[in-house]
Length: 284
Ligand SMILES: Cc1cc2nc3c(=O)[nH]c(=O)nc-3n(C[C@H](O)[C@H](O)[C@H](O)COP(=O)(O)OP(=O)(O)OC[C@H]3O[C@@H](n4cnc5c(N)ncnc54)[C@H](O)[C@@H]3O)c2cc1C
Image 1 (cartoon, rainbow, N blue to C red):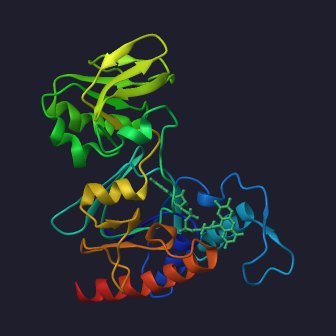
Image 2: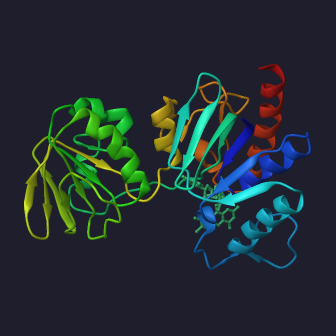
């Protein structure tokens, strides 16, 4: 079992990893991309220590390189699930499974959404972002799962247990898996209903649906946190003074906990979370 898995290789995650390493703890860092600054083509001018502005992506790459140089294992992968164990957590990616005593969520602020008519109106009223959290409300009902990758397949396993009427909507993407349930590959045009979601309209047909679960791409920290029962306030994970959520051993730092969404604050959070994790491991 690992001591610490850090999900996120941005400023918060890497800073925490560096501070943990200096306390003789070897964290595993898992990051899927360059985070908030992925695809950002402008320079960062307000971060300490750069006489000449640095491109955001380069700053993040430098951080990862610095961690690796210190002997920290940083792998590129997408975490699709975090599950509690009797002691610690089970972290699952499409390429591996890990057990760890502590998880630090440093996954930034990405929120998955679907820019289609009716999405905002029915979010929470038939549209859910988390099958494990809300699936039970739709037991034995007509359920849609929207997605086409490993995260969708993971959520599907749960939905199939609660309903025998599940349809996959890939929203125009190919499905790379063999499944034994209906698949609609048309693009989704609209989520329809009155007070609650009652149908999904695609480019070719309208399908009656009671509940739709969004499982596009990979889950955000808010979805991990919901699966684990973490308290979320205004879309931020709630942590105590020690950066621990209400789930023992599950810590969070950086943009994901709110406050100023800036690199300097994420780095500061990472350092503090590392100290708190060190203390937690020493006493548990
Ligand atoms: C366009 C733009 C410009 C900005 N400009 C500035 C600026 O000039 N100055 C400044 O101080 N701040 C700026 N910011 C804000 C700054 O980028 C963030 O505050 C900072 O990056 C937050 O760090 P973080 O580590 O919390 O999250 P992020 O940097 O977002 O990192 C999140 C990490 O989590 C990983 N991750 C997420 N989900 C998963 C998963 N399921 N599995 C594996 N890994 C996962 C990502 O791959 C990434 O490594 C800007 C932000 C944006 C969007």
